[in-house]
Length: 141
Image (cartoon, rainbow, N blue to C red; front, side, top):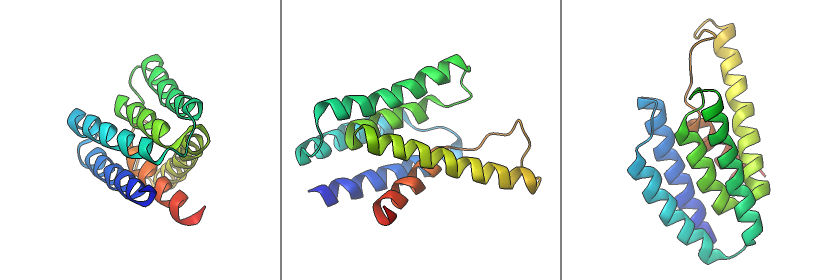
C-alpha cells in the first residue's frame, strides 16, 4: 500500500508540475481530487503520527501566508500542494521536500540568469521542482 501511495503522489505531482509548467497555474479540481485521494491512501498506511502530519501541513500554511504577504509572487497552488504533501509525508519529509525544491529552483534560476535566458523579474514554475525533489527523495535518500 505504501508503494502505491508513493506512486500516486509522484503521478499527481507530475500532473500538477506539468500543468504549472505549461499554464503557470494548477487546476483547483486536480488539487482537490489529488488531495483527497492521497490523504486517504497515506492515512491507510498509518506510518506517521497525527502531530507530524499536522506540522507538515503547517509548512504549506506558512507558504500560503508568505504568498499573501508578498502579494502572490509565490503561487497559492504551491502552498496548497505543500499542505497536501505535508499531510501525507509529515513534518520532516515535507520540510526536506521544500528545502530541496527551493534549492533546485534556485540553481536553475541562477543558471538561467547567467545564461541570460531569464531576467530578475521573470518567474519560473515551482511545482516541477517539487516533483523532481520528491523523485529524488524516493530514489536517492
